[in-house]
Length: 144
Length: 124
Image 1: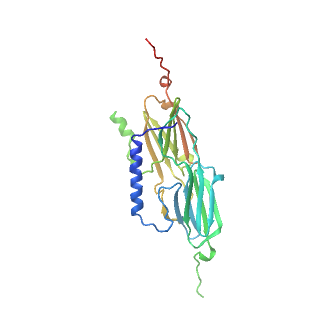
Image 2: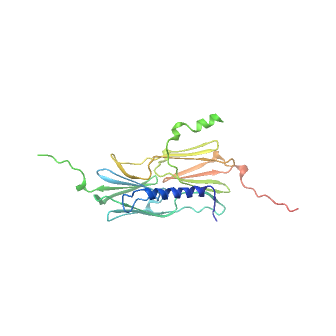
Image 3: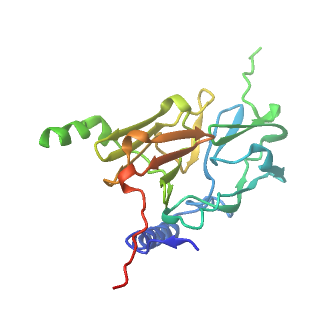
């Protein structure tokens, strides 16, 4: 039996939920898959002329259990985060950290090369680096 | 007392920071706190116990290629900060901490005198 404190945490959690829903209602999604805020793991996506960089903030996960796939221009990061069950006599005062299975999907730009992917896990952050195709990289053309 | 409160909040600490999610579990021996601080290397994590205040601070340090432009950012600040007040029965001098893969585990034991004792009920 886990005892959870009902007050005031739950009121705050409820406010949090409301705020999230409002944000979702007002936000313009750039892609049909959105990238829903508030999911786990949180993601940052950026790019350089040579590569697309994706950072997934997924602390405390065994990297061997992470499932990273690229299929038809869509990147999927999936896995599970397990928590040690608290002892029988324990009281849970705050319970905010994510627990359970997760799956997040990112639509990649058209010019990436799915065969040139590099994934590293460090300090609880999964960094996926996908090179852009050679043909898509900016070239300087010499004028004869 | 007023001197103390000034020391606790210098201007630099008021800058915007992310609030890391935590789990706090209490059992007979003390309190265990887990905090998610992804992206913080060990040397950029700072823990302060001052009087009855516990402060967790960390700075995110990600490897980023030069000239990167963000197109979507959910983690938009590079600092974490969260403050807890400890209660009297906790022994702040015996806090032990582990930090691995972005997860901080803090064990704060209860002071000797606050360990639970069974109270005998006498039937008269």
